[in-house]
Length: 411
Image (cartoon, rainbow, N blue to C red):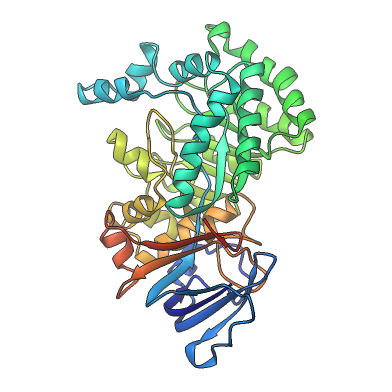
């Protein structure tokens, strides 16, 4: 495939970086008046300026970008899109003033989703979830992490992970699966959290690892969920099985989850709405990605994570959707990019790096995804003609995608 008449080819990676941290996030290597060629194997072959445009090979597909911008497809490193039904009733509860924790205490929240999922067949769960995954792909996502965590029993967690594997087979997007049995305490273990943690360590983790269904393990380390000590025990058990941690941390309180994640070399610690100087220093001195979820802050009316402070301190900041039925029912990464600019005071270039190369780093995929260079996967968004990259997050609801390419082919 040959793409010509590109007004701006942005997100190039001439130096082979696997992340952009701190002040590097303002860097967005680009080429004006460009073309790009995709190899038959679906990777980027070459690119250059318009005056070096090669002749199209016989039978080679040609796309005229017509003055559109080309950027890497989004890399969404935190989602919960495998779920059953809807929680729109809780949406109304929030309008009436109930908090996330109050809804959970009344039997809603994660346990509500677990009940619905238990009653849903694997095929129906797959059909519902595939529709959501296809939707986010068409909105610009080329790499997607999907968590379990609405099962909370071993059979239902395995059912979720099998659905994630089926999505990976059905769509060209690159999918990473995360086991999140420690999302909440299952109903069968109500009042027996210590027993549930032992069940995760002794039964769930070995079964998940034996079936090869997960790339990562996650724990909701926060007030009212799992303690730092429980989180570390789960991470240690997972490490013996080859599962690297990605931790939910500091959404509701200063939980110690950030520091625990850094100590255990977590690939990322996610949420971070409530972090201070100590947490930012720990992240800045580590390779753990600080993944922030502005869609949840927008939907729940919570504080936005301090992306600007973390970036200025030298951390690797990623932004992800947190697509889930209760606190962020959207996987639109263009909206996430816009919130990064509007609410978190990142520049368009910084926020784009946060939703591409750094999102890929938070899934350990940035050697092949999240930027544009020969040999990288050709996951690309071609925009409609526009004057500036800043138009994309600025006009955040206007139609903007002309062509979506994943793995070197149009979708």
